[in-house]
Image (cartoon, rainbow, N blue to C red):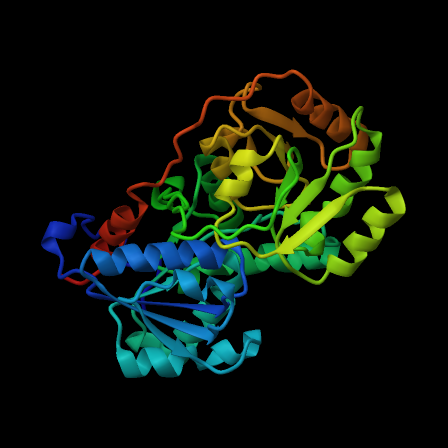
Length: 368
């Protein structure tokens, strides 16, 4: 069995001496939307374009992100969208015998552990990306303790853990009790502009939110803040999820003009046209929407929902970071950027070479 802290620590990390990971297999639950799945599809397409065989095992591949799957990537549907369906992954790994298994996000590490357990010494190396917050404010004491214990088990079934930012890597090192030197930092690849950006008609000026309509995102905070602004302005949230009806009702009760167009394949156009982008989550991993907004020169207002936020919003000229539960601070920050504040210059996104950096890491884990 491969172990992150086993006898392979001294292995050379020079891919030129390795066989190379010619076949990469990854997996996801659905393609209904989400940053983890979208980043996976970008990486998979780039890996395929660089000459690797890439297979994706997807519970239900019929979601809106299906349009972003490269024609060069093989997709194996499981026929069900539930998390339990992915317990079939070991069977597909055994049949296909890929060189490496890539776990695209924190949500999926349980399936990585299951696959390692089922396949034992025949399991290929597993590389996992940490995509979500390791400290969750929605966890009570018992759940937090169980989650901390679970994180400490990750080095037992993963060969490498990848962080998306330096601050996140420090948190991973502490939570998983790993040496910081063993945690590569590879950002997500930047979003690609879609060939056809289909957007509904948007107001002339608006505040924008981009993300799933789920409790974690706390869009209710943003809706609560808008009636307290110096000017009335519409709110547009691009995304879909279980909180749609509740958010629409809240906005109507508060007199907020709310547009919910649903999932949009390419939100960059809407970001470029927004007065400000707001992120009001309780917790995040490395929120890519902030970097995407800044890449088109749109300022951001965000809660302190992740250690990486301060790395992305590195200057007050780019946006404002506010405490999660300070509604007055959120309203003041929005007022500032909706006033006469100077919009930031576009910030070049990181991650243009992320696909090749992952391949170097994958190749380094191959036997000589």
